[in-house]
Amino acid sequence: MLADTAIKFENMNKYFGAFHVLKDINLDVAKGERIVVCGPSGSGKSTLIRCVNALEKYQSGHLYVDGIELDETTSTIRKVRNHVGMCFQHFNLFPHLTALENCTLSPICTHKIPKADAEKQAMDYLAKVRMESFAHKYPSQLSGGQQQRVAIARSLCMQPDIMLFDEPTSALDPESISEVLDVMVDLAGGGMTMMCVTHEMGFARKVADRVVFMDAGEIVEVNDPEGFFANPQEERSAKFLKQII
Ligand code: ADP
Ligand code: MG
Image (cartoon, rainbow, N blue to C red; front, side, top):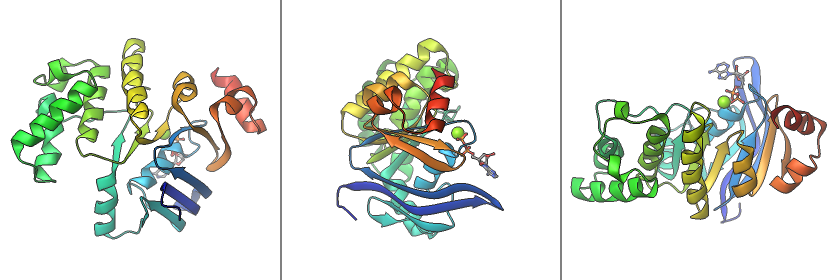
């Protein structure tokens, strides 16, 4: 495996009971690469990226994250999760904690970072997502887009090498969508390895190194954004693009 590979799927298969949800997945994601995953609802996009964070088990083939093969041992899972941050559609901030406290909880409790250091770091990341002036607000006092930006800062406070996004803007109103996408564009510019499930094709065009199109549990097409949008190679990709654009 190449030293500059961040994530490697090799003939990976996953089932939910008898249902074959991920079919023979092969994909190498280089360090610093930005991948956008798209495809129809139910095609397996969430399951694919949840496997990277060991939120889902797979049944055959291999999956390596930062050179570590994901098995089911807690020590491997813990090691891999140390490298991987994840941001979902529903941000799940702790409602009884402020934005700042949401960001410092894991660094203090899991990484045993002294409180003052954790707070300083959290303020830096809150500034990065343009939320430093809301550090002492509770989630209920923030808009959806603001909460999502705090959730991104919270993930960054664990200093991941890889960030996974699963439709982070799909529950947001239009103004909030662009706030969150702007933060993700900044992050992409900073060299973070990213796998983003999104149908925000403007974002894909702007930052993706490659677009992965999935349908019915398979990776149907991997292409650069220019090629994917202008000249999709597969009939199923072309049909999907017609529906969303
Ligand atoms: P997508 O994110 O592309 O919409 P998902 O990865 O969420 O797709 O789901 C892929 C398929 O797997 C869907 O048919 C979905 O119903 C099914 N699925 C997802 N999670 C589970 C689960 N925990 N148990 C059984 N089936 C599931
Ligand atoms: Mg999904």
